[in-house]
Length: 79
Image (cartoon, rainbow, N blue to C red; front, side, top):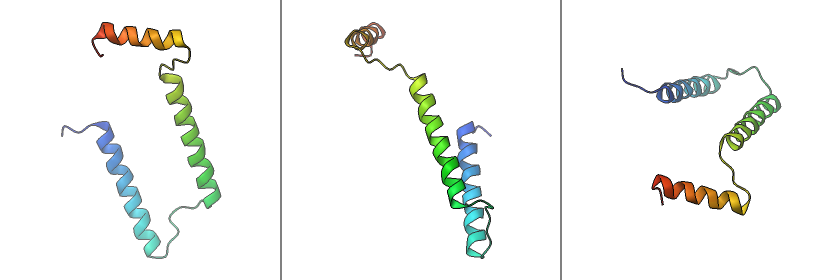
């Protein structure tokens, strides 16, 4: 198959969500975690992802840096 890694991840996430929903409908508690623990883990994951994104991206805060970004875009033919 010619699938990307992202396709497999989305498919796995969908299958886990469907299994979780089926178990919930049947009255089972599929996740042995409290809502507070789930919230804390998801909050940590979101904060980590945002921090990594902000660190990775080229964040230009000064006027000189913004101008340099424009100049680089012109050189690359993107503007």
